[in-house]
Length: 312
Image 1 (cartoon, rainbow, N blue to C red):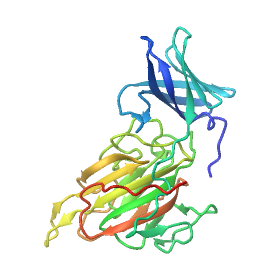
Image 2: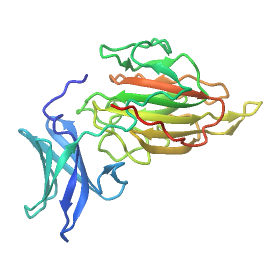
Image 3: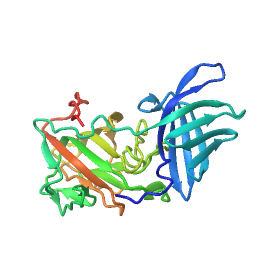
Image 4: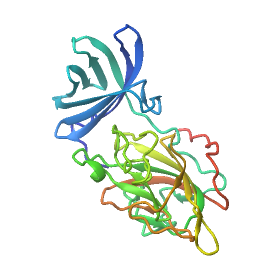
């Protein structure tokens, strides 16, 4: 578990209603992100939170600092005061527009049980399916390992938790990656509260941004459900169809049957032979749990209905 500081208690998601100039009430979400040493950034999202009312549309950028037990974030004279699990929204005239409540969301697929045909790769008891896999004191699989069995077409579920690293930025912020066939990387990164980039969490690394940034705050358990169809090659080794992938991040589709044009980043070159899955070692203490896979002999042509999440 990562060390936390006074800023950590203020970071997170807040949801509620604010009063518009015409007097009507509107749903709003606010994401507050710790940047170290009492500094914060944030964004106010019209309609709600990502995946729950906000769809990459209107937003208001905020910056500020912690003062004692509260954080004050500003957009000009517009102010959001965060304290005691509340976010008080005040306009430039000093009028309170609304008080939002902190929410700690969970993926609807957290704890998802394996399907009947699935192979459990990791359940906290053994690393038999991984090369040099290590289990931490909490029973989680540590970063920096690969599966023993290569994969072609598959459906995969895994859960991951990112460390709290408020001073880090960009690719240094809780970096790991899900490398499929050691060729194509689905990025794992602390991208909470940011506009998605092509190397952020949920992206096909340096290739395609996620359709929406569904990152939860660090130290939250998050889920990936991945549907992958391997590239096809003819008898002479010529590629005749690209690899395709769908990614569901925290219960929301962020990559929709995307055709991957080539290997990504530092991935191995494409080829007709299957490859293993790697959980990247990027030096940050990312951990994993509840990993299971369906090996398939035919393309995954779409997102089948996902099973009912396990009762928590």
